[in-house]
Amino acid sequence: MTKIFSHQDIEALDNHYRKNFINSLPGLKPVNLIGTTDKYKQTNLAIFASVNHIGANPPLMGFIMRPVSVKRHTWQNIKQTESFTINSVTQRMYKQAHQTAARYPREVSEFEATGLDSWYSESGRAPYVAESPVKVGLELEETLDIKANDTKLIIGRVIEVLVDEKLLTQDGTLNLSKADAVTVAGLDSYHSNRFLEKMPYAKPDR
Amino acid sequence: MTKIFSHQDIEALDNHYRKNFINSLPGLKPVNLIGTTDKYKQTNLAIFASVNHIGANPPLMGFIMRPVSVKRHTWQNIKQTESFTINSVTQRMYKQAHQTAARYPREVSEFEATGLDSWYSESGRAPYVAESPVKVGLELEETLDIKANDTKLIIGRVIEVLVDEKLLTQDGTLNLSKADAVTVAGLDSYHSNRFLEKMPYAKPDR
Image (tube, rainbow over all chains, first blue to last red; front, side, top):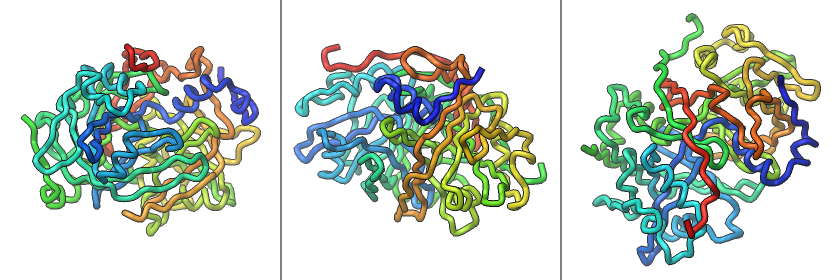
């Protein structure tokens, strides 16, 4: 049976229920950790389920930043340094990744608090997560203000990628099954994955 | 072993490889079908891996539209009707969903071409995918132009949700494992999911 939620039904939902419900609608979302540092080299690490592909040429990725009316260390750091990293989350570390969502005071680094290791490349200014098999270094490219709810789309340009060699395939697609990449439903329900099939390029005549 | 792709390495990649590679960096992405109709009721259905949660109150979802320098039926239809649907893709139908990416002429509906069934609710103007266990009806809320690569973030306001009752849970999070929701790595590599764990709200003291 199908349950219909009308516009009025959705408005009438309890806040907690609506948050979980609306967050589940896009389907299973990728889980990533965004690493930053402030100008005094204090590191920050935060979990995001909104990281997205924006384009391949130039190589761009984006994520949604919630309203900055409350202090968002990730956003403050990106404004200061114009630099951040996006790091994949695996089955082995999703509990630690989830814990970065706790409201630690600014002087506490989520790296130390959760036991994840920070790691710096030669060129990057922002910290990577040593445990992540896919690490992406980005420079701030563009920020768009979403008027509808005072959030932002933050877009970075990919300037470096560090990837576990065993994930590389011949055509460039990463083997995210071998990476044990997790996804999340809503805010807190984690899922593992299993490879099904690589589909051919779609053409009208087949 | 870790392979490092520098800025120069990425620029030097073959176009096809780079497209697959950069599209894989966010991790496993949700797969959705966007249903629209033009003012003459000609339906269109297109697969998107960029559908995202924008906010719960008001309920907002977004997706990335590639440059409209070539004809994009989804975008033309949304401009005309200000209405669209987002429909979940399951293990049973991902092959048909993938096939909607073929460049059919405007007079061919991807519903007919792929064998997916269109379905209309009482209130909605845009077609839903009958087979999808999660169907979301939206009205165009906001369009943001991404200067960096001439793409757009299209944001819709959720005005209706139709969901298979067996996916509903007590706190509002949808059971996307029961839904057999699929994800995609890069452009064409589909994955199934398995539920791992629902994590508690993260607090600094645990």
